[in-house]
Image (cartoon, rainbow, N blue to C red; front, side, top):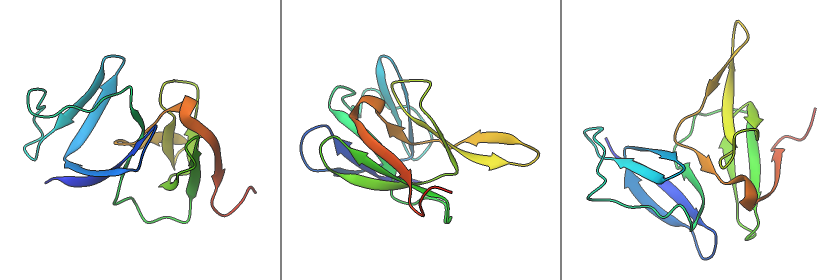
Length: 124
């Protein structure tokens, strides 16, 4: 099943694209089709021009972060924890019990493109 993602560009307006999921590494993005197969010869996303990729459908939660990009655009990420120690992307997590963190997949937010990240409901 394909999912809709909002792709925030470093310059310009966001795009809406459909694919099942994506992965990334230093070389770029790998996009997957509805059969969960990588499609490197059918789809390409430029790592040099993308500030963030966020799924349109996220888990319903009161725990959300507001992310503000350098280009002035903003969006929310449903998560309980964020980590900035593994650039290029910020990692978001759910807190599991017993204490363990589960990384949320299919989110890409370039650390160098972020101005601020704060809890939507304020700091506690």
